[in-house]
Image (cartoon, rainbow, N blue to C red; front, side, top):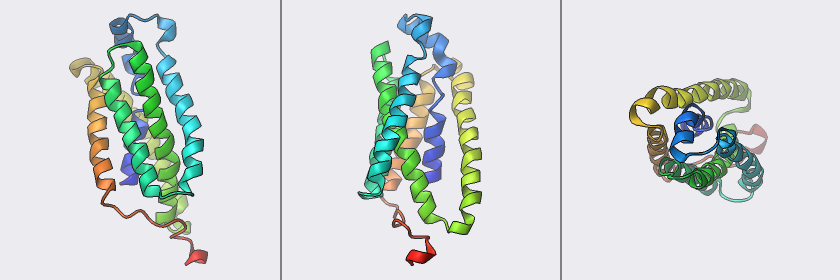
Length: 184
């Protein structure tokens, strides 16, 4: 479930890029400013990854990952409903806050769910899935976006994320260090 959440959330990271032309025209913004929402998304995500990463070990990770996934989902929905450049900028920042949580907390949870001698393979798989999810996000925007509108991919992924957030309430997240033989 956490790997699926990572997959879906990473897919959103570059999903706006194929729609730059349509968004620029719709919001009547200069070409020089079109990448600003994605820049703020990445800066916010990086900043909050440090903050969320710090709290991952200090409070209940289930609450932290639910909060991050909710923030990411809310930001995606808000992106879909953006009616102007400022709202698009704010919505991408809210998504960045959530992504900054999902990545470090997700990796922490996966580390505790997988025995140490199997982690390298799993993290290699995560690296491959990360690349694939970037392609899926851009593919949704590139191929489905022109047919159903640039907002559809954001609503689609936020719908999947909403289902994951609901499921997270019913899943037991492993305890910190649960797969460490020394701590058993």
